[in-house]
Image (tube, rainbow, N blue to C red; front, side, top):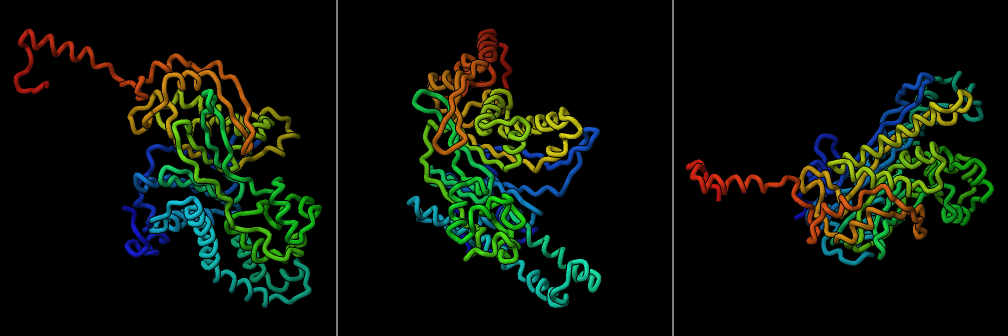
Length: 461
């Protein structure tokens, strides 16, 4: 039984030292890999550009409900951290009781995103009041240089506050409730669902939307607010950032009129309303779910120039499923491979060309397995219950198909997969074979029993 708001208390999930989410069990059918941001030095070594800003969780509340999320912080980690601490509580604390229809669950998710945004804005009231007070100390109609000469303390503090108010976060959250999958997102973190079609070919569907200025739907939304398309596309940025939807970024939301390209909007152009997909009934054809921050796919796009980055990442994940023994190992191995590819790309560039690829952002990859084989798993909790038949296993071993859009798919032949080994690792019932052959043990017991040499103080049967 999940706790309720009244039994837990709201302060229990907001406090740094006593968060409600700390008591939630980790989902053992999932794993997370990550890598911190870096700037490349000329000698090839790396150094942090800023603090690690990504946040993530993977909870299994009970047999009916589990929840997963990645929060990709920008210009600081405070909003991502706040969302991590609060959004699960907004969804799970008594909100899903009696929620059966897809529309009801989607409403819970939308309300959760809006509550996080609203409560975060309330938490920065003191900063907004201090900003207003500092602005009153600085005379109007002064150039930035003149203002600093008159009151350097106020200008420095005002700049620091503006930096804090520019902090924001993308967010992608997956909720599995009553065996149905829902995905909500703002910003450019992605969710991909991998499934096999009727021919056993592995395909991927992107369940999230990239809320950036390459999204035609978002450009149309901004245009209806009174922002001309040519002004939107001029610098590919909205104020101080590039996302059309996000959490936080108060400076470009509440203060949008201070930005020339946004001042003509009739209401806030950057919003926190998520786009929500679902519910998708989880079936035997669904293999695994991927959540990732933009640092992962953007690093691979930058280093390889691929037009099918989702497909390429899924292929890497499938390869690691064959090798690794845990889902965390799968996720981390893929992250490490992308990090190496990006670093090698930088090192192979000429000195003059390195500037454009001299750094990369934080990376987080979360994998939730449904029934994809993990043949080297050390325990059943790592491998999950596999309910594919032998024919499915053979097809997964010979071909895969992935997509970078919601509907299009791209087939690719994966002839290197050892399909026969995978088939032999699965029984007709769909369960993974035991990792240890106990037949010699039982044969020795029978022999010792016939010879009368079994220890008397041990009951073997």
